[in-house]
Amino acid sequence: MKKYLIILLYSMLFIMTSCHGEDENVENKNQINFQLIGKGNLIGNYVNPQNTIITNSIQWNNFLNQIDSTTHQTSASFITTYIDFNEFIAIIVVDEIYPSGGHSIDITKMEDHPKYITINVEKSLKENATSVLTQPYHIVKIPKTTKSLLFN
Image 1 (cartoon, helix red, strand yellow):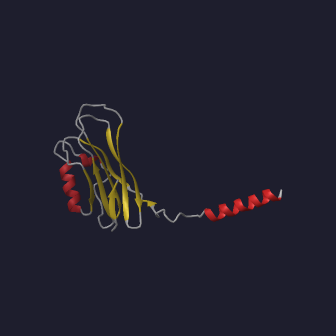
Image 2 (image 1 turned 180 degrees about the vertical axis):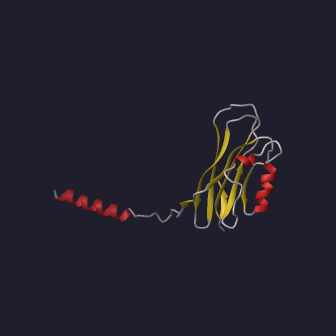
Image 3 (image 1 turned 45 degrees about the vertical axis):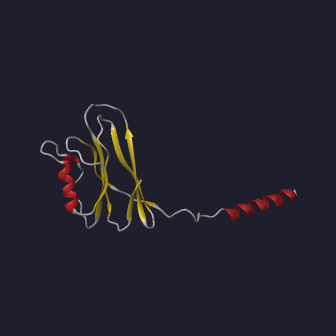
């Protein structure tokens, strides 16, 4: 019995000294909540595939002019086209042009690290539903930051 008690005490001591509440090698990171501006497919007015950070209204208006045409106003489907660039920045991801529908591009997560922010982007194909040229896009806004933004 004494032998088992000693083994139990050593086991508890080992567990208590080897387990810490925090791992020193793990970076402190928090998820950043982002607000949707627009998501869908460009049809007609295509742009170069891009991961872009928009920091002012001139850049934003130039982008809107690129995606809108007299026949198809893509920005009309956005939740808003007004962004207060004193408070926010816009993040735009645009995929390549595909010969069929069913493709999407998604900003899935943003993580705040001490010196930078990572933006996770995923592409997916749900089905080849249509035979029309499409170009997936996803646009969000986050609070203004001075940190570097890195796309994954």
